[in-house]
Image 1: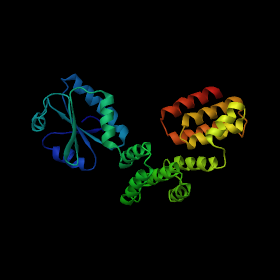
Image 2 (image 1 turned 90 degrees about the vertical axis):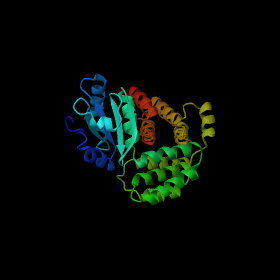
Image 3 (image 1 turned 30 degrees about the horizontal axis):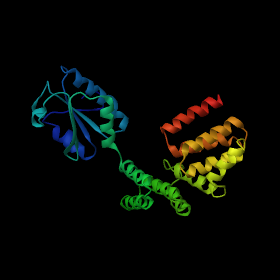
Image 4 (image 1 turned 45 degrees about the horizontal axis):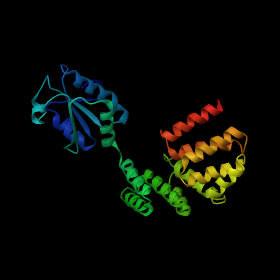
Length: 283
């Protein structure tokens, strides 16, 4: 192996360096040879990509030009060839040239935490309107992993989205202030509580049709749009307030947009789009 990314393997150290190591994390075993350029490209890609995953996956290299025994044992037919070993078993494999996108997709699938996977299941249930199913899934997972704070964050967020602000507040109180992503359910709860004292979204839309410069109504619309999970409407309302009067309620248009960005999370396409719009308006 080159550098500090992984280890060179042969029949002699395959058990310890790959099989035993796979008990703790997935091991990417690449069969390659310097004489086969596509295999060199895959090797370089894995050496570049894997370090970004903070040790959640390992890399082992078998240079077939130097030793073919391991390749024969694992029935490798051509180069490059990747076997992914986890918990002592081959769980995936790729044959032939692959690009960075394919490698990244495989790495991310194999290194996703239980919390990441669970979040996808929860989002699917919420998209179908099955709040009780999402809550049951999260509550069972918390029983299995009582110290997993990210699960409690998701539970609080789902409770707010269901409209159970009292229970959401109770769950939030059990989560440490510095827990990653805690700001998301906290912000959502604040929007929900604020919306309770405002007119309905339909009423506000009617008012704004008659009074387009009514900034109080436009701000209330932004809040109600967040509660309805109509995030682009909320961001548009914030942008409109900024465009009309930056001083209104201490620049509430901008701060509302930032709060919505917290809900959407890092890298969300909508957040990226409106961050750019906000920046252009400010400058």
